[in-house]
Length: 326
Image (cartoon, rainbow, N blue to C red; front, top):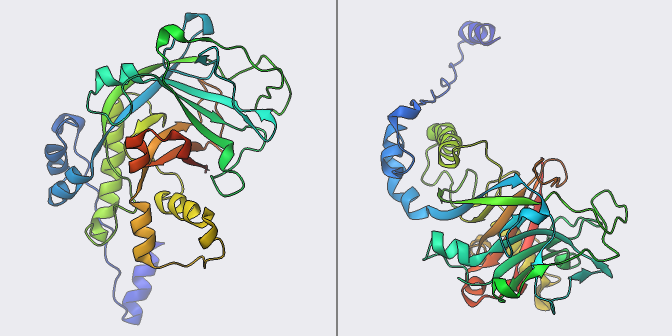
Protein backbone atom coordinates (compact mmCIF):
# COMPACT_ATOMS: atom_id res chain seq x y z
CA UNK A 1 0.00 0.00 0.00
CA UNK A 2 2.83 2.39 0.80
CA UNK A 3 4.41 1.67 -2.60
CA UNK A 4 1.16 2.44 -4.43
CA UNK A 5 0.67 5.64 -2.44
CA UNK A 6 4.23 6.71 -3.23
CA UNK A 7 3.68 6.04 -6.95
CA UNK A 8 0.53 8.18 -7.04
CA UNK A 9 2.35 11.00 -5.25
CA UNK A 10 5.08 10.90 -7.89
CA UNK A 11 2.55 10.89 -10.75
CA UNK A 12 0.66 13.83 -9.24
CA UNK A 13 3.79 15.74 -8.33
CA UNK A 14 3.01 15.67 -4.61
CA UNK A 15 5.75 15.74 -1.95
CA UNK A 16 6.63 12.47 -0.31
CA UNK A 17 5.84 12.20 3.43
CA UNK A 18 8.68 12.31 5.92
CA UNK A 19 10.06 8.84 6.60
CA UNK A 20 9.02 7.20 9.84
CA UNK A 21 11.66 7.78 12.51
CA UNK A 22 13.81 4.75 13.25
CA UNK A 23 13.59 3.49 16.82
CA UNK A 24 17.03 2.52 18.01
CA UNK A 25 17.00 -0.26 20.62
CA UNK A 26 20.35 -1.12 22.20
CA UNK A 27 20.94 -4.58 23.62
CA UNK A 28 20.48 -5.04 27.37
CA UNK A 29 24.23 -5.54 27.72
CA UNK A 30 24.84 -2.05 26.33
CA UNK A 31 23.19 -0.13 29.17
CA UNK A 32 22.72 -0.26 32.93
CA UNK A 33 19.35 0.89 34.33
CA UNK A 34 21.02 1.83 37.64
CA UNK A 35 22.73 4.74 35.86
CA UNK A 36 20.00 6.79 34.22
CA UNK A 37 22.36 9.20 32.45
CA UNK A 38 24.38 6.37 30.91
CA UNK A 39 21.21 4.53 29.94
CA UNK A 40 19.85 7.59 28.13
CA UNK A 41 23.18 7.97 26.32
CA UNK A 42 23.01 4.35 25.14
CA UNK A 43 19.46 4.98 23.88
CA UNK A 44 20.59 8.16 22.06
CA UNK A 45 18.38 10.30 24.33
CA UNK A 46 21.24 11.95 26.19
CA UNK A 47 20.07 15.46 25.31
CA UNK A 48 17.15 14.95 27.73
CA UNK A 49 19.24 13.56 30.59
CA UNK A 50 19.22 16.67 32.78
CA UNK A 51 15.44 17.10 32.55
CA UNK A 52 14.70 13.43 33.22
CA UNK A 53 17.14 13.19 36.12
CA UNK A 54 15.39 16.18 37.70
CA UNK A 55 11.99 14.50 37.20
CA UNK A 56 12.98 11.03 38.40
CA UNK A 57 11.60 9.86 41.73
CA UNK A 58 12.28 6.83 43.80
CA UNK A 59 9.40 4.41 44.33
CA UNK A 60 8.63 1.17 46.07
CA UNK A 61 7.77 -1.56 43.57
CA UNK A 62 5.55 -4.25 45.10
CA UNK A 63 5.61 -7.83 43.83
CA UNK A 64 2.77 -10.00 45.14
CA UNK A 65 3.16 -13.71 45.84
CA UNK A 66 0.27 -15.90 46.98
CA UNK A 67 0.47 -17.27 50.51
CA UNK A 68 -1.90 -18.52 53.18
CA UNK A 69 -3.33 -16.00 55.62
CA UNK A 70 -1.75 -17.95 58.48
CA UNK A 71 1.75 -17.65 57.01
CA UNK A 72 1.69 -13.83 56.99
CA UNK A 73 3.77 -12.38 59.82
CA UNK A 74 1.95 -10.12 62.25
CA UNK A 75 1.71 -6.63 60.75
CA UNK A 76 3.51 -7.64 57.55
CA UNK A 77 2.83 -5.85 54.26
CA UNK A 78 0.23 -7.64 52.16
CA UNK A 79 -2.27 -7.41 49.34
CA UNK A 80 -5.66 -9.01 49.87
CA UNK A 81 -6.54 -11.40 52.65
CA UNK A 82 -7.35 -9.91 56.05
CA UNK A 83 -5.81 -6.84 57.71
CA UNK A 84 -4.03 -6.76 61.05
CA UNK A 85 -5.65 -3.98 63.12
CA UNK A 86 -5.68 -2.76 66.73
CA UNK A 87 -8.53 -4.13 68.82
CA UNK A 88 -10.23 -0.73 69.06
CA UNK A 89 -10.02 0.02 65.33
CA UNK A 90 -13.38 -0.32 63.61
CA UNK A 91 -13.71 -1.72 60.09
CA UNK A 92 -14.49 1.25 57.79
CA UNK A 93 -18.02 1.63 56.45
CA UNK A 94 -19.29 3.61 53.45
CA UNK A 95 -22.94 4.00 52.42
CA UNK A 96 -23.97 1.69 55.24
CA UNK A 97 -21.77 -1.29 54.32
CA UNK A 98 -18.29 -2.50 55.14
CA UNK A 99 -15.57 -1.54 52.68
CA UNK A 100 -13.28 -3.98 50.90
CA UNK A 101 -9.73 -4.42 52.12
CA UNK A 102 -7.06 -3.94 49.44
CA UNK A 103 -3.64 -3.63 51.08
CA UNK A 104 -1.70 -3.13 54.28
CA UNK A 105 1.80 -1.63 54.23
CA UNK A 106 4.32 -1.96 57.07
CA UNK A 107 5.88 1.51 57.14
CA UNK A 108 8.78 0.53 59.42
CA UNK A 109 9.90 -1.98 56.81
CA UNK A 110 9.85 0.72 54.12
CA UNK A 111 11.93 3.00 56.34
CA UNK A 112 14.64 0.35 56.63
CA UNK A 113 14.78 0.12 52.83
CA UNK A 114 14.70 3.89 52.20
CA UNK A 115 15.30 5.99 55.35
CA UNK A 116 14.64 9.25 53.50
CA UNK A 117 11.24 8.27 52.13
CA UNK A 118 8.43 10.78 52.91
CA UNK A 119 6.03 8.29 54.48
CA UNK A 120 5.79 7.88 58.27
CA UNK A 121 8.49 5.55 59.53
CA UNK A 122 6.29 3.69 62.01
CA UNK A 123 2.84 2.19 61.92
CA UNK A 124 1.05 1.00 58.80
CA UNK A 125 -1.18 2.18 55.97
CA UNK A 126 -4.39 0.37 55.06
CA UNK A 127 -6.05 0.85 51.68
CA UNK A 128 -9.78 0.28 51.19
CA UNK A 129 -12.24 0.38 48.29
CA UNK A 130 -15.97 -0.14 47.72
CA UNK A 131 -16.50 -3.07 45.36
CA UNK A 132 -20.28 -2.82 45.26
CA UNK A 133 -20.49 0.62 43.63
CA UNK A 134 -16.91 0.52 42.26
CA UNK A 135 -16.57 4.31 41.95
CA UNK A 136 -14.29 5.55 39.19
CA UNK A 137 -12.92 8.62 40.92
CA UNK A 138 -13.08 10.72 44.05
CA UNK A 139 -15.69 13.12 42.75
CA UNK A 140 -18.05 14.90 45.11
CA UNK A 141 -20.46 11.98 45.45
CA UNK A 142 -18.01 9.08 45.41
CA UNK A 143 -14.99 10.34 47.36
CA UNK A 144 -15.78 8.04 50.28
CA UNK A 145 -15.51 4.95 48.06
CA UNK A 146 -11.72 5.13 48.32
CA UNK A 147 -10.07 5.25 51.71
CA UNK A 148 -6.55 5.23 53.17
CA UNK A 149 -6.07 4.90 56.93
CA UNK A 150 -2.88 5.47 58.86
CA UNK A 151 -2.60 3.02 61.77
CA UNK A 152 0.03 4.35 64.24
CA UNK A 153 -0.13 1.32 66.56
CA UNK A 154 3.06 -0.81 66.80
CA UNK A 155 3.02 -4.32 65.37
CA UNK A 156 2.67 -6.00 68.75
CA UNK A 157 -0.71 -4.27 69.19
CA UNK A 158 -2.11 -5.62 65.92
CA UNK A 159 -4.08 -8.80 65.38
CA UNK A 160 -5.75 -10.41 62.40
CA UNK A 161 -9.28 -9.15 61.98
CA UNK A 162 -12.21 -11.33 60.95
CA UNK A 163 -14.55 -10.17 58.21
CA UNK A 164 -17.70 -8.21 59.10
CA UNK A 165 -20.96 -10.09 58.64
CA UNK A 166 -22.07 -7.70 55.88
CA UNK A 167 -18.88 -8.08 53.81
CA UNK A 168 -19.51 -8.35 50.06
CA UNK A 169 -17.02 -9.74 47.58
CA UNK A 170 -16.51 -8.48 44.01
CA UNK A 171 -19.23 -10.71 42.50
CA UNK A 172 -21.81 -8.82 44.55
CA UNK A 173 -22.69 -11.83 46.70
CA UNK A 174 -22.69 -11.53 50.46
CA UNK A 175 -20.07 -14.04 51.58
CA UNK A 176 -18.90 -12.90 54.99
CA UNK A 177 -15.74 -15.01 54.58
CA UNK A 178 -14.40 -14.61 51.05
CA UNK A 179 -11.60 -12.09 50.45
CA UNK A 180 -9.03 -11.33 47.83
CA UNK A 181 -6.25 -13.94 47.82
CA UNK A 182 -3.70 -13.05 50.51
CA UNK A 183 -0.31 -12.18 49.03
CA UNK A 184 2.96 -11.31 50.73
CA UNK A 185 4.92 -8.45 49.21
CA UNK A 186 8.47 -8.37 47.95
CA UNK A 187 9.33 -4.64 48.15
CA UNK A 188 12.05 -3.14 45.97
CA UNK A 189 13.31 0.45 45.79
CA UNK A 190 13.35 1.55 42.14
CA UNK A 191 13.79 4.69 40.06
CA UNK A 192 10.52 5.96 38.62
CA UNK A 193 10.21 8.10 35.49
CA UNK A 194 7.18 9.97 34.13
CA UNK A 195 5.51 8.37 31.15
CA UNK A 196 4.41 10.04 27.94
CA UNK A 197 1.97 11.71 27.70
CA UNK A 198 2.05 13.22 31.18
CA UNK A 199 1.92 16.79 32.36
CA UNK A 200 5.67 16.54 32.89
CA UNK A 201 6.37 15.56 29.29
CA UNK A 202 5.30 17.36 26.16
CA UNK A 203 6.60 18.67 22.89
CA UNK A 204 7.99 21.77 24.56
CA UNK A 205 11.19 19.85 25.20
CA UNK A 206 10.78 16.38 23.66
CA UNK A 207 11.03 16.61 19.92
CA UNK A 208 8.34 14.76 17.99
CA UNK A 209 10.86 12.51 16.28
CA UNK A 210 12.03 11.26 19.69
CA UNK A 211 8.66 10.48 21.26
CA UNK A 212 8.48 6.89 19.99
CA UNK A 213 12.12 6.37 20.97
CA UNK A 214 11.39 7.68 24.44
CA UNK A 215 8.29 5.49 24.88
CA UNK A 216 10.29 2.42 23.85
CA UNK A 217 13.03 3.35 26.30
CA UNK A 218 10.49 3.70 29.15
CA UNK A 219 9.10 0.22 28.53
CA UNK A 220 12.60 -1.27 28.48
CA UNK A 221 13.65 0.71 31.55
CA UNK A 222 10.67 -0.51 33.54
CA UNK A 223 11.31 -4.12 32.48
CA UNK A 224 14.97 -3.93 33.49
CA UNK A 225 14.31 -2.13 36.78
CA UNK A 226 11.64 -4.57 37.94
CA UNK A 227 13.54 -7.64 36.69
CA UNK A 228 10.27 -9.55 36.27
CA UNK A 229 6.94 -9.37 34.47
CA UNK A 230 5.61 -6.09 35.85
CA UNK A 231 2.38 -5.56 37.69
CA UNK A 232 1.67 -1.97 38.53
CA UNK A 233 1.65 -2.31 42.32
CA UNK A 234 3.66 0.65 43.53
CA UNK A 235 4.06 3.18 46.32
CA UNK A 236 5.16 6.75 45.53
CA UNK A 237 7.01 7.59 42.32
CA UNK A 238 5.28 8.41 39.04
CA UNK A 239 2.08 6.59 38.03
CA UNK A 240 2.07 4.03 35.26
CA UNK A 241 -0.45 5.45 32.83
CA UNK A 242 -3.39 3.77 31.12
CA UNK A 243 -5.61 6.54 29.74
CA UNK A 244 -3.30 9.50 30.28
CA UNK A 245 -2.23 11.98 32.92
CA UNK A 246 -4.38 12.03 36.07
CA UNK A 247 -2.87 14.83 38.17
CA UNK A 248 -5.05 17.50 36.57
CA UNK A 249 -8.19 15.35 36.78
CA UNK A 250 -7.64 14.75 40.48
CA UNK A 251 -6.72 18.37 41.18
CA UNK A 252 -9.65 19.91 39.30
CA UNK A 253 -12.14 17.41 40.72
CA UNK A 254 -11.03 18.40 44.22
CA UNK A 255 -11.12 22.10 43.29
CA UNK A 256 -14.75 21.75 42.15
CA UNK A 257 -15.68 20.07 45.42
CA UNK A 258 -15.24 23.42 47.13
CA UNK A 259 -18.60 25.21 47.46
CA UNK A 260 -17.32 28.42 45.88
CA UNK A 261 -16.26 26.51 42.75
CA UNK A 262 -19.24 24.16 42.42
CA UNK A 263 -20.76 26.06 39.48
CA UNK A 264 -17.51 27.11 37.85
CA UNK A 265 -16.94 26.53 34.15
CA UNK A 266 -15.32 23.26 33.13
CA UNK A 267 -12.76 25.30 31.21
CA UNK A 268 -10.30 27.01 33.51
CA UNK A 269 -7.08 28.86 32.67
CA UNK A 270 -4.14 26.59 31.96
CA UNK A 271 -2.12 28.34 34.64
CA UNK A 272 -4.68 27.35 37.28
CA UNK A 273 -4.90 23.68 36.29
CA UNK A 274 -1.11 23.28 36.09
CA UNK A 275 -0.65 24.99 39.44
CA UNK A 276 -3.24 22.80 41.16
CA UNK A 277 -1.96 19.61 39.52
CA UNK A 278 1.57 20.30 40.79
CA UNK A 279 0.26 20.05 44.36
CA UNK A 280 -0.53 16.34 43.96
CA UNK A 281 1.58 13.20 43.78
CA UNK A 282 1.00 9.48 43.58
CA UNK A 283 0.70 7.71 46.93
CA UNK A 284 -0.03 4.20 45.67
CA UNK A 285 -1.41 2.23 42.77
CA UNK A 286 -2.74 -1.33 42.63
CA UNK A 287 -3.07 -3.18 39.37
CA UNK A 288 -5.38 -5.90 38.13
CA UNK A 289 -3.53 -9.05 39.15
CA UNK A 290 -4.50 -12.73 38.94
CA UNK A 291 -2.29 -13.48 41.96
CA UNK A 292 -4.54 -11.41 44.24
CA UNK A 293 -7.78 -11.65 42.30
CA UNK A 294 -7.84 -7.88 41.78
CA UNK A 295 -9.92 -6.97 38.72
CA UNK A 296 -10.58 -3.26 38.30
CA UNK A 297 -12.92 -2.79 35.36
CA UNK A 298 -11.27 -4.00 32.15
CA UNK A 299 -7.77 -4.86 33.43
CA UNK A 300 -7.50 -1.49 35.14
CA UNK A 301 -5.58 0.07 38.01
CA UNK A 302 -6.62 1.99 41.13
CA UNK A 303 -4.51 5.09 41.82
CA UNK A 304 -4.43 6.88 45.20
CA UNK A 305 -3.16 10.49 45.12
CA UNK A 306 -2.23 12.88 47.91
CA UNK A 307 -1.10 16.50 48.12
CA UNK A 308 2.57 17.03 48.98
CA UNK A 309 1.61 19.06 52.06
CA UNK A 310 -0.87 16.44 53.25
CA UNK A 311 1.71 13.69 52.88
CA UNK A 312 4.23 15.67 54.92
CA UNK A 313 1.60 16.25 57.63
CA UNK A 314 0.30 12.65 57.59
CA UNK A 315 -3.21 13.71 56.54
CA UNK A 316 -4.11 10.48 54.75
CA UNK A 317 -7.81 11.17 55.21
CA UNK A 318 -7.41 13.70 52.38
CA UNK A 319 -6.30 11.13 49.82
CA UNK A 320 -8.20 11.14 46.53
CA UNK A 321 -8.29 8.30 44.02
CA UNK A 322 -9.12 7.26 40.49
CA UNK A 323 -9.75 3.99 38.69
CA UNK A 324 -8.70 3.70 35.07
CA UNK A 325 -8.89 0.73 32.70
CA UNK A 326 -8.42 -0.15 29.06
